[in-house]
Image (cartoon, rainbow, N blue to C red; front, side):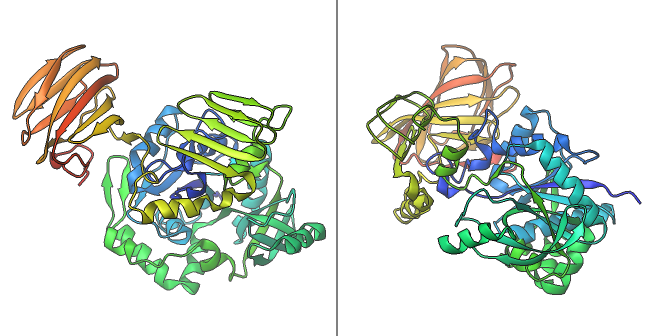
Length: 472
């Protein structure tokens, strides 16, 4: 019998422990943290090592949909649909909607569930592990992948192995919560425990059968969300009300910890979940003093630091065991053994009503990006890049006027129904209340300077009349 292998990539995380680089609008899986490609692109790329695998299905936050599509286009990767979560509901509902969609097409479909934000250094060993897991999944097992522990880690959940099922597969005896340090040391010494990787492999219908038996409420909500879904360009928009009504639950709690069909494939694949800045220090290329540096960094007399500069010179003198991450609008300085607590700082930013946890100074949009340059009382200056062939919504503002200056490329400007073409060094004025649209009709990126003036300059002062990206 033929069993098709369908990779399903989960890209719903926010990665708050990697602030200030990872933010809600641009989370860690979409950033080039461990290579020149993003973690998401590396995850898609390693699928090439899987023999006979279909192109992936992707599940992501609605706000990230165009960045996901663009990153796949950049690496020449195809997909079989990008499912959009209107709200986050953890891994069980995300996996369930993918399983429902796959099972409707192919009763024997096997799904390989992969987080988008993990590092796997050994793609060949990963492929070998998947091949072993596929045999077990074909026999009805719900397979997870256990990482051979390299040290006593307290930040991961563990899997205790049970009896040998053959072909390098073991029964799961128990899933174990994150242990304290002595318990973790005992686990590693026993050689009976693996790190829980959060990667899974099973037939879609086997997973749905177990979920229906244990959590019929999750299954029913996901069925309703998919039944009310709408196709939009490359995207499948799940019904918002139905999906929001779904309980938020991890696949471990919902199914894997309770099923009698769980199996584990032990793998040694150079895995790291990149859960904190210390993980990037661990996997990074170190100098003779144990420092990992990225960007324009100068260091003298320091040891075992992770130093990352995104926009300017970062100089460090005589410091040890620190993480210092510079971005244009925020700098993190932390002891390397405290970086798991970065999420506490993010919560303080939220509580203070600030937005540095949400956006960078450069904000990505479906049509390109904009970047704040300067701001003061009643004015704001931005750089704008519009990709070839793209255009902003037809819109107006109640509280601000705008001056646009073309730096390079060609701009097609619509203002109160009239169209004009602008080229390098030309400019135009958009009065308060005027309907307007900016478009790039050319073949090279359009770069502009926008000067806003008015009583209120917030991004929510936009009334959209028409938008090809179907934003609200």
